[in-house]
Image (cartoon, rainbow, N blue to C red; front, side, top):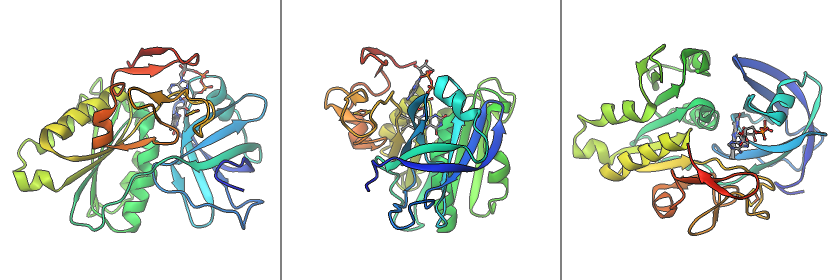
Length: 284
Ligand SMILES: Cc1cc2nc3c(=O)[nH]c(=O)nc-3n(C[C@H](O)[C@H](O)[C@H](O)COP(=O)(O)OP(=O)(O)OC[C@H]3O[C@@H](n4cnc5c(N)ncnc54)[C@H](O)[C@@H]3O)c2cc1C
Ligand code: FES
């Protein structure tokens, strides 16, 4: 058995995060206690809903007990089918797949987790790792409207000495009006050179927000790790649907997490993605 073997697991728990978003918890040691592969923050799984489809989902949480979670936004056929599942229903899970967020070696870095919308799912797993290691960090979470903000209650129980939280919404219904990248730019504007060189940013969310962040980080020479999304079919480097020009990097295999240097070489980043037929279309 490898990461690419489909494991059939039953749903243990379902949490309603907000309208249209559910967290689904299952146990990856179920039926596979000796073949268990522990994930790293930022990795994803291919989730198979029998009779419907197989789609990529970030692993939003995991524990030593083998319980993993995915946080699913209902936007189409397969995510809707996932939302209709009940506790005890079965899904197929392939993973953990792809690259991950590499943690800083010690607690000397000032760490920012910057996410937009459902992109917070990948950062949630990272926040748990950082909390467990007692690393200080700051979260900037953005959403279209207040009711789209997720994990707020869970973030509240984190020790405030360890973490700081900033929220923003496109319409100003909660927190600052504007985008997460704007808040970040505003926070660092008074930093001196030493403070800036000590920053490390982990990001996931809409690609235009990631591209803006990338530009800010390049300007100030800040270390950035960003998780990208593309439509996927195989999830394991075979079909080529998630390829990005000009290097042909595959989001499923070379990503989804890319560092600043690699992002700087991807001409498609912030500009083009592929539809289900493989045709290039603009990133909105
Ligand atoms: C590495 C990775 C991690 C992801 N993590 C999460 C997550 O944690 N939570 C979550 O809710 N979603 C996540 N997604 C997006 C998720 O895979 C898509 O929302 C899902 O595949 C849509 O399937 P569907 O059958 O419901 O929609 P469809 O009926 O197939 O399509 C509905 C609409 O969504 C668009 N769409 C379909 N697939 C994708 C895709 N892969 N990326 C962007 N748009 C797409 C289509 O173009 C169409 O407009 C992730 C995607 C990737 C690549
Ligand atoms: S999804 Fe097939 S190569 Fe990435």
